[in-house]
Each structure stands twice: as C-alpha cells, then as structure tokens.
Image 1 (cartoon, rainbow, N blue to C red):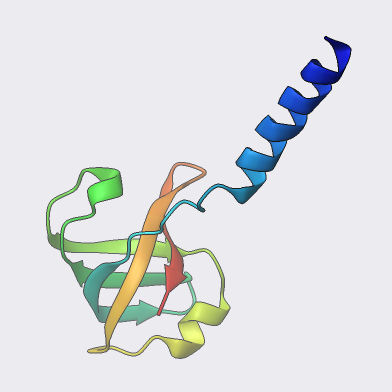
Image 2 (tube, rainbow, N blue to C red; image 1 turned 30 degrees about the horizontal axis):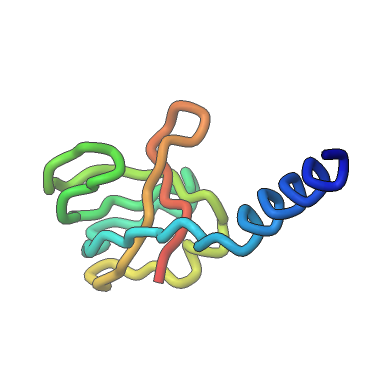
Amino acid sequence: MRNFSKLAALAIVSFALAGPALAVEYTKGQITKVDAKQQKLTIKHEALKNLDMPAMTMVFKVADEAMLAKAKEGKTIQFVADRVKGKLTVVEMK
C-alpha cells in the first residue's frame, strides 16, 4: 500500500508538470498615443475577453518600460492586458 501511495503521488506530479501550458490570448489593437514619461499607451483595441471589456480606445500602463521603445503611434499590435496592482496594464506585446 505504501508503494502505491508513492506511485500515485509521482503520477500526479508528473501529470501536472507535463500538462499543457495555459494559452495566452492576444488582442489586436492600434497604438494611438505613446506617453513615455507616464509609461502609458493609448490603444484602440478589439474586445478584451479576459477582462470582459468591449472594443474601445483606452489608456494602459506598460509592465515593462522596454515596450515603449517598440511602440509607435499608428502601429498595429497584438497584446495581452491584465489588471496589475489594480491598473490595466499591457503585460505582453508583439
């Protein structure tokens, strides 16, 4: 019985490690303003499903200041937004 418990625990851990990673869903948008000083982007975007928000234009903080170097007004992007410390934040961008 003791070996069965160890084997079962090992199987559960192995399954958890081998399971599929959570898929990140990107949203299409267009940058309308870059505010490097405030580390913010204004983005006209499609619906943000993970935040249950319809398509609109809104201001986001950026999680990483390096994103601002890639951001240009008028540029079409794909991004992931989430709430970070209560603020809507771009956490990934491509």
